[in-house]
Image 1 (cartoon, rainbow over the protein chains, first blue to last red):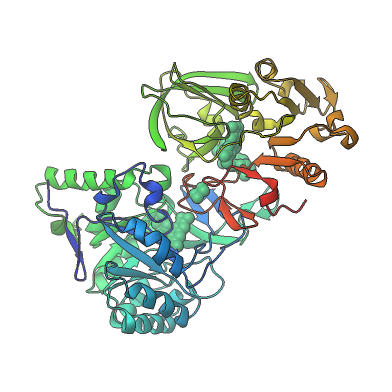
Image 2 (image 1 turned 60 degrees about the vertical axis):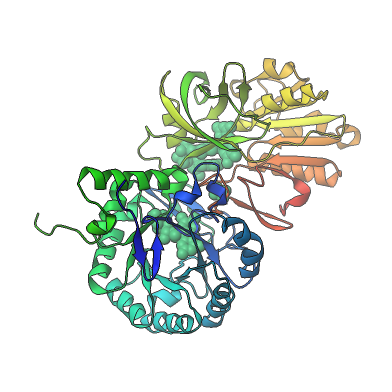
Length: 305
Length: 257
Ligand SMILES: Cc1cc2nc3c(=O)[nH]c(=O)nc-3n(C[C@H](O)[C@H](O)[C@H](O)COP(=O)(O)OP(=O)(O)OC[C@H]3O[C@@H](n4cnc5c(N)ncnc54)[C@H](O)[C@@H]3O)c2cc1C
Ligand SMILES: Cc1cc2nc3c(=O)[nH]c(=O)nc-3n(C[C@H](O)[C@H](O)[C@H](O)COP(=O)(O)O)c2cc1C
Ligand code: FES
């Protein structure tokens, strides 16, 4: 068994494989299929201050090697998470990392403040990149001044490891990453979904109720990988890579590009056991290539072709 | 408990040019499956199909460890699935979702149309085991779209409508004489089929104050309650069709009917 432990800020993960927010519920949805205790961490579904019903159906469209979603942060609010969901999932031996959302800085602060009071929660992921909400969400992640403002404000009241989730819908993601690093983020995760759209030519109607939605899955992997590589070269804080990871090979490529950990998203829908298979696959890769620790391959891209 | 199992294809039987029965065999003992439950099948052979596809469970043979699906070709996945050959592997997550409730009433009408007749056989079996004898009403465009009549006859009388009148009464299911509201005798309706059909039935049911359950086919990504893509608006807010459905009582839905 190779040493799979990685660190994000001060926080140790038993392995670099975590699951992406919005694709894994609170974790419990997958407990019939895998042993959740094996995961490095679980990024739970996006949380807002109050109950949100999200966008109307239809919210999903399969596209070539990917899918568009327009869920729109449906969740029962931070109090419900703290009282009903967290007590159930905290028993698992893995990091439970809430994904914090808001439509204003005050709302991000409200959610953060409540989560900050829970000792066992060691990290939060600040989602400034949701493309599916009218207010806030991605708006914070595509403008540098607002990304800085929300990160600084949350940093001030947050004692946990602060991971800021970046939007790929920007011209210079490395510049964004540096801006949130300078504003106090302990780590960045990228990418969230790409803004996309689907039309049914037969009905001449949009497929999604919101017309546009977020693209995820293998279709986005090459762009996500490029962005993780650019950001890793630009910042000193750890990078968590995601976007279209379907197997252990994909995960290793993100690690070679500079990611200290990865998140598995859409792939969970296709194979609910994939996250654990990826952990095993990374271990096998390290053994076969005579590495003792996964840390040895972080950013280990060999430049000569 | 939900399972993920590699089944082996044991039979693909075409019923007409776009409808087939798919039988899958497993070494593993099958869990209890209730009528209305569905499965998410991964169609790996079709490289252009990324997500699993949901299908109602049509029949179960617990002794032979076989589950069956009744499938209508709709697009890429359903056409590729029919090309699987005997002995090939298919990965399936099941049993998913809720199920049609056992009726408290005596006079029961079960209406199916299109691929929506898939769960009717299991309903018939389950109701019979519980001493309920329903009446079935199935509809199609022509005689060529009407299936399972003999099998459903084992569990209750079967009425038929076809749009061209080639079999049974001519017209849509809702134009069948049973819907003559003056002497409509059924106390509970169950229905599964195209949404316009279910909505027309729901409209009749709510107008005449008859209890009615419908099975929805919202598009799904995960099938297990994790993605929140499949929701339907209910009086208690959005609910997941994959976990809190697919069967809903129309009095809980916010259908504009
Ligand atoms: C709970 C549930 C149970 C179902 N049971 C059955 C069953 O027993 N037998 C059966 O034949 N079908 C059933 N369906 C519908 C079936 O899942 C779809 O026909 C199938 O997913 C289409 O896949 P495809 O790749 O062939 O079509 P695609 O190529 O993906 O799409 C072709 C066309 O079908 C439409 N479509 C795609 N998915 C769905 C969907 N889920 N519902 C309605 N339209 C869709 C698309 O909008 C498109 O116009 C069920 C659906 C659900 C949600
Ligand atoms: C259905 C769905 C819901 C999502 N919900 C959230 C969310 O609530 N918060 C968030 O930060 N990201 C959300 N995402 C984005 C994913 O976490 C991830 O960034 C994206 O899907 C790219 O990774 P993938 O290609 O591996 O899926 C969602 C994605 C999907 C497909
Ligand atoms: S399909 Fe994912 S929650 Fe229903």
